[in-house]
Each structure stands twice: as structure tokens, then as C-alpha cells.
Length: 216
Image (cartoon, rainbow, N blue to C red; front, side, top):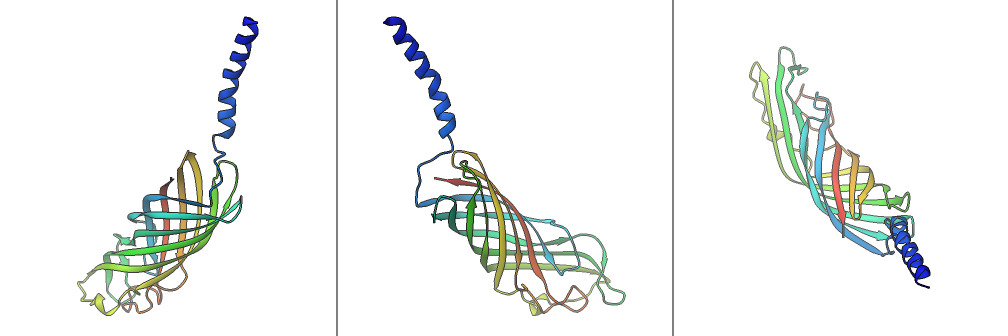
């Protein structure tokens, strides 16, 4: 009898880690999930004569998921994000005899992305797509040319609103912690009125974001 007792005890102890491992990512179903997100944007402005994600900025805020079924959920975020561009290579401006030595633009936004998300597995890793509306809170733009040229950039303002296509993926790392990779691109120009010879006729935000998300 004692031997059977110890055998049963050993089997029970041995099964606990297996059950725990199987259910590690199988959480109870909840209609709503909320959490925090934070990371960095790597950005450029398409149409400013420079290429490359050379401007780095913050991307942080809160997120809420509304689960529509076992594999689908809508999400909404409220974020503070920084976008813009950096150009440090000498390039022709398009105006005869004028070269751009340095160009930078810093744009701060309050942003609200709304996405539909598809869950790939029991780990709850998921991909999403949707739209994001942004509102400018501040803009700072500087331009250095050779020979020095006076350009009143206030005459060429950035649009107050920005509408983006958003694509992203979230890999569950541990419990409520996810690694997020996101791409987004302006669907409408952030500016059409460009200083003559200093870019294309229209400019667009082009953003790659790397963030961490934690759901409570």
C-alpha cells in the first residue's frame, strides 16, 4: 500500500510540469485585453530628396483589444509618436548652383491606430492590418544650403492630419509580453506645397516601428 502511494505521488509530480507546459500559452478567454506599448520609430519622409530610415523617435502609449472570436480581435491604440527625416549628405537641390548640405524635420504626433488582428496559434502571436489617424502637435524643420539660401519654411506647412496604412506582427515572448514589428505609410500627402527645387511635388511619412507590448 505504501509503495503504491509513493508511486502515485511520483506520477502526479511528474505530470504537473507537462500540464503546465501544455497550458502555458492557453489563457482563459477574455472579451477585452488592455496594456501598454513602447519602443522606437525609424522614419523617413518620401519626397524630400533623401532616402533611408535615419530619423529615430519614440513610439509609446496604450492599447485595447476587443476579441470578436477565438482567432479575431479589433484593437485601438492611443500613442505619442515622433516622425521625420534626416539628411546629412550633400545633394543637388534641383535649383541651378544650389546644393543641400543638411536637412532635418522633426514631427510629433498624437496617433490612433485601429486594426483587425488574426491570431496564429495558441501562443496568441498575431498579425494585424488597419488604418491610423495622426494629429500633429509640433513641427521643427531646418535646411542648410550651399551657397546659403533663404527659404521661409513657414510658407510650406506640414498638414495637421496624417492618415496611414498600418501592417504589423506581434510575437508572444513571455506571458503578457510581446515583440511588435510595424510598418506604416501615409495614404495622403503630409505636404504638397514644397519649396521649389527642394523635393518632389508631394511628401509622405514612411515608418518602421519596433516596440514591446505588455497586456495585463
